[in-house]
Length: 170
Image (cartoon, rainbow, N blue to C red; front, side):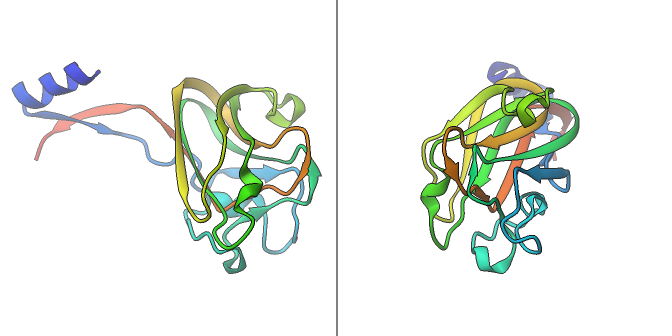
């Protein structure tokens, strides 16, 4: 792809742009449970607000569930290549450690059996980390912490697909 892009921009006056934005923005999101019914719902993580201060109400938060999960429904299948997660910034940033990003079209086990895209070793407090991987076709994107009773908190989740469109350079 890189050689092709270089050729296009140098010799034709055409540019290649990423034609899709955040596929998760405003999409339907659910999670294994909701810690505080009024302020910590799954939708908070797809509202476009990356504010990582939990007290400001833009983060999702589960109860201390066994295998807590959060899932966004993209509405149709995409070739997903990147997922970004904004971690809680005010306290307990280690809660995200050990999470898995899973993508696919199945809702078996709430989507947690879908293909493993990336493993979250850690994300510092308040930081947005992007995980890049080979394209995985799927409608559902899950963040899942297997094997323990944990809270799962996400302050924002973004999902992107590598798609390009050719436009005139300006």
